[in-house]
Image (cartoon, rainbow, N blue to C red; front, side, top):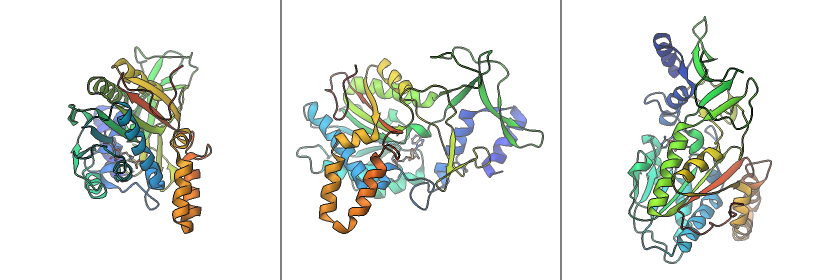
Length: 357
Ligand code: SAH
């Protein structure tokens, strides 16, 4: 058992089983043993590689998407440029390089980064070559200018609750102890009340719900409606999901067992874009998509960008081609990863997205 596993087992022995959401939150954010507090997850030597770490093209095209939104809302003299969960800061650094080439784009103010990990805050401040202001949560961002925000692989790191259909109702999935004192999954004895079920479930179906993700989407929707602007959320998950258990642990680029690696593996769940879009819309914003990451990047011109980069540096052409494929191909990150755009009501249809049918 990991140190965090032991600490949770002691807690469960005293106070009873814990919901999956609490275990996930502790695994990621526990002050001493949490994954994001202690580990360097990113890159070849870490546990996983994210899109901005694959190629500079990703952050550059996100920057150009933000610039196009800025242009479409009348080129305001001030914006609040922000990112949720910036990791190593690579996306924002690449986006800023692209934005610096957009005539008139307002880059005078600081970049606002929402990040809980002190360790990553320091790395971000060093990577992003511009003044940075860190915030614990979205609520800390200024609200006196249109918001231009990006979140890549942020929502998948927010805790989910899971409910399993037994025929009697949806029972919350809990973590308890077996006879030998090891952590095991189990179910709450009584069904939870008031859960949405879009299609009739069959026994064993798992309903996932991210209270934290939905709260962020709702707050983001309300902010966009009030201060203007747009947000681009990119993550993995199905556009319309049935019932499946998507809680997954990843360490050293391979899947790991959830309960025996607590705090030492990344723990994520697929993002339910429908839940996020509904929350943001209910709060007053418009939602577009999700569309596949491959579609998003192709429409933003990644093909041409790759060709230009390869022409400028022929020796790097094979690795640029490989990055292009990895980011956009359907059997790579092109369709499992998706982009959802959230916009203030007055914002024209953002680039790469289609009007809702
Ligand atoms: N966007 C980056 C990193 C993704 S990993 C990339 O694409 O490479 C998730 C990031 O979200 C990390 O920076 C993590 O520390 C941060 N994070 C996780 N939960 C958070 C929370 N509740 N509030 C703010 N940041 C959080």
